[in-house]
Image 1 (cartoon, rainbow, N blue to C red):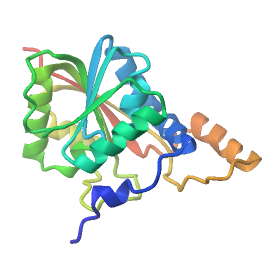
Image 2: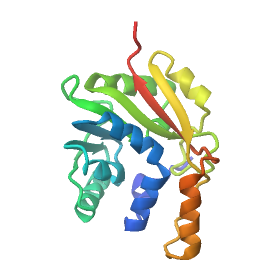
Image 3: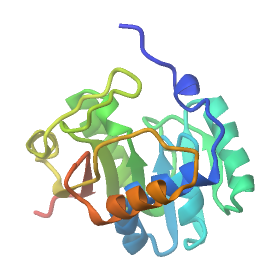
Image 4: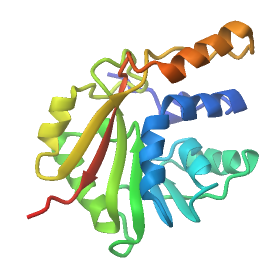
Length: 214
């Protein structure tokens, strides 16, 4: 299967409407990060950097990492465009060479579902070495789109089984994915209102993960 490159997936210029739309859709997940990131946070697989940029307005030390140099450059550009205070660097999620406990929280959106069970377990272990808690969002089995092509669209029960060796709490959020309409109109504003008030689609799963207590 020919996978769509991340460069292609994130090729569109980031508009203010797209920036805000992402924050609205993922707000239940972002809120969990905000509640846990008092001083520092690191985003794993930052892509265009939207969530790191938003969070950097409230958290002193926010770092976004990605292993794609073009996406890191795009995130830095968006950081300047949207007046963010985040930092972005090119790093491998499997080689997190930070001191233990460097960050309050590791967070990621649309990242873990691209890996095998064993790789997910390893990634979680590495993140919990450098942070107290992980907040991760993944598309659920109800999400109708495979953005890149290799996404594992699973149920919450599947994720609970994969993360059974950790202390995890999960909940669903979101709505049916749709294309962002670039035209501002009364109809679009009505749709945004419906999006904010509706949780019926459950297109994503938010997972809060800690080390298991003995």
